[in-house]
Amino acid sequence: MLIHSVYFWLKPELTPEQLTDFERGLQFLRTIETVHAAYIGIPAASDRPVVDAGYTYALVFDLGDQQGHDAYQEHPIHLAFVEKFKPYWTQIKVYDVI
Image 1 (spheres, rainbow, N blue to C red):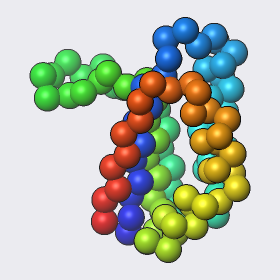
Image 2: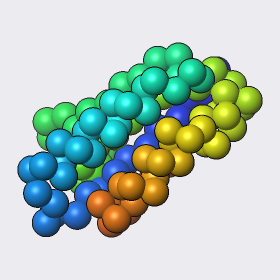
Image 3: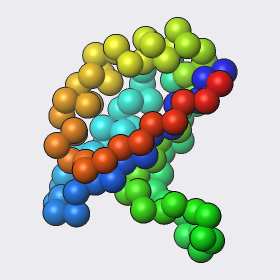
Image 4: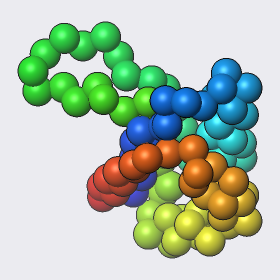
């Protein structure tokens, strides 16, 4: 199993329409064949000092294995997502776990 987690810090000046478009883009990533399970959301209201809730959106995908991960990274839907939405974020962090 390979779990791919991505945390996005979006620009604060994005319009509601841009945020909706970004959310739709995240949801469309779920359609990539190597995504076995998908979780997309915003920070939970966890008020503990060890919780980093500074991000805007997160996605957590089970990509199966390294081959699934590599196919996901090169998939046209993923590449289009990055190309379109890269201007929307100030930072991303990626954590891949096996």
